[in-house]
Image (cartoon, rainbow, N blue to C red; front, top):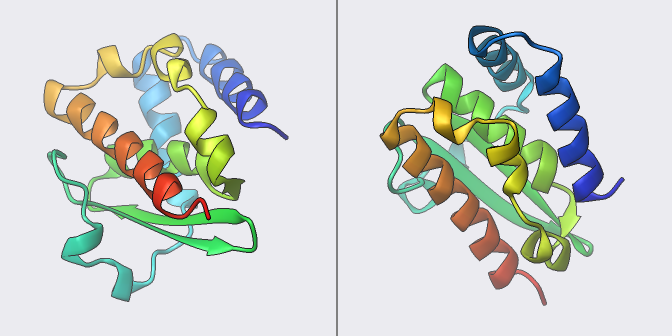
Length: 137
């Protein structure tokens, strides 16, 4: 499945909910499915700057794909990072670098976040793209 297909599935999932309280509950449930991050990777070098809460993202290469580990100390933020992991983990660097993130605006996520959380979301995406750039060879 391509990144665009996953993004379309996410848009369809968000359309199932009538309001943002339900969508936030869905994000929280996504956060609970996030694979536990190894404690060794919860380091200052993997922390996302610009986030209101603590968010860690770590990437490594498995054959030609990038695998991400992520976690957060806040439940909604953990759900947001889990959403990004659905889209970007187990993808090639070129897939990640070429992917757009307009699905975030299309589901209305950014406009329903506090300014600090919205900035954090942008910082998470930027870090994911930077990992892809660094690990593309």
